[in-house]
Length: 93
Image 1 (spheres, rainbow, N blue to C red):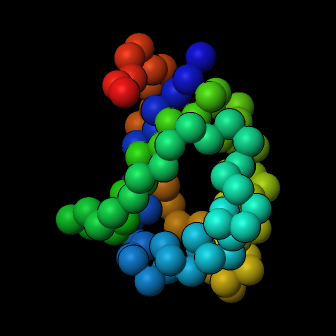
Image 2 (cartoon, one colour):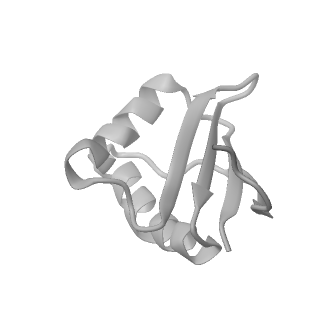
């Protein structure tokens, strides 16, 4: 079942987000397996991401492999994450 994840990167900003996205290189390699949608923007404290994944397992694989590797490529560690997750009941459109 699809899952929505609201993720807060408390110590991240736009510059760091853009560096991570460049390292992920989704423009050339395509999005990771299981990612349905991805949105991101500034929050009062840090950076926020709202993703929809086909499953929690797909996100967990991406977190452990793709995201950690991207942070390592830019010489950083993944900051503490605050994640709120819920199973998707409805999506429009």
